[in-house]
Length: 126
Image (cartoon, rainbow, N blue to C red):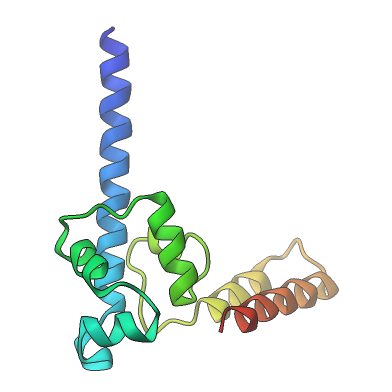
């Protein structure tokens, strides 16, 4: 029984950590100097302003489904909100392209193919 509680505690702490990361990243995305207001960001990305305000206040948890839905609606790669320290000025497609180019185990043709897929997916999301 003791192991069960220890495992659940670790699982809960891990989920809480991811929820905090998602919240920090969402707050980073909604910069007042860029968007002017939460309302403008919500309108631009076809999101509910009230729901967004609830998430930003920390009163509502950003769970797995909500995080993936937000990423899709905002045009971010799947899983992006879960990465600590996400930078708003960063271009995720460019970062992925750079990572692919650093992959020594891929041939030049494979790299070009993967990079082409990344750009196609990015274009589809706009």
